[in-house]
Image (cartoon, rainbow, N blue to C red):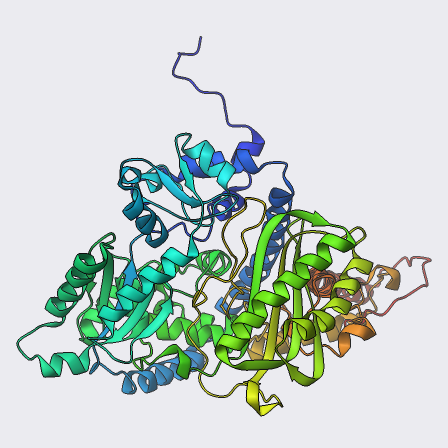
Length: 614
């Protein structure tokens, strides 16, 4: 007999979907206040609560696609490990030396981040909320207090899932006017320490306190930051956490080390910086999301210290842009120039909102018109106009689609925005019948100053990839919160398909050998690279295939079809190489038999096919 402690083996479903369970934990997994939470238990609750939903099916499909991509990455890694990479490693080491020469340790950068900002503002009006788990938002949470975080509740989480994690959770509606007013009070204090501070969002900012320290030589960086935090708390009743470091990237990471109401300093010393980065998990740095984290983990990069050991492979496994990002993070390098957001040359301006499922010509057009009015406000406030317009929607199945149109003149009025966006919405209505959506957004690019009349593409350095300066989404049908237009990130850029020349030559040789060997593979079974529809070929926005690096129109259907083709092509490459090797063995056996004077029986099949890989 088995003892009472014996447990039955887990079901197949329970042991599967490991990567999906981790992904469902959400982008704010590493938010402060989650340290002592049993993430495995939280992940199980989210998994079971989401199972069967359209969101779950969409995430499941994305997870499967990512798994296939990672399989390709690992095959490439295995091949490269068999090559002599000494010359590539020398080139990387030269690149590291050049980057080291550019290291700037002369500036003291501070990142100030309010603790659970929206929740903290609400608690000022209702102090009793400090003692209970509380979240701001409804359908999607924008933030929650630290009492709620102890249960695994976090920003970006669906309200019904948060309720399962914490049944006693109290929901508070958003009040943007209160948050912006409180943010202004905080900024009035920050400007005294750096007149050119950079507001990264409504609740965080970067400061360069180097000048302040030169004027107050009796103070250390830690003392200055303590003074800032104390003054903010006394005058606004809002606690802030801060990070002190030689550059903005490190300061941002450091501000999350001792939350809430704390600070952390990374000394302006190369050895200290390298020591800090060596054990830092890759996900702790902005720019590494769920996708990139999983790809890096698959190839053996869990902390930034792992980058150096794999530098010869990583430099060829990922795109040039991604590799540059990895190397700079490993070295702990980042920008030291802090200046007001207004001085950044904006490349785009957009607004979007989430709501309950919406369909029908009337409701969709009304939503488009209200979105155009919101975007008009932002354009007028920034004194900008744009010559390219993009409509973005998220279907009720959680699939995201967008349509773009270049205009002959710059526009900024709600009427113009609506009139030019309507045909794009109608195009989506024709493609998805009926069109049922849960998010709509509008964005304009190719910006210029409104008074210029004609748009030229935004010049200058792009602003930091952060949240919008002011919340500009509507709260519809009880679902609060907003989804910011995603800035450029590393997720989805990887891998680039930029293999080393040795790998490319090896693959090409295998293909040529297979063609010469005339493999018996029916041409009808060979996948063909789908041609993009003519209407999309003229689109300005393009996406890069993560497998072959080919530039494609920014259309989900076309892009997914092409990726499926590339995945199939990778499989064919393996079949080609295996078949070519098997054929070579058979030919050698036949030659040996011929030399021994043994007649060889021949098959009757005469049809031969040539494999053509496009």
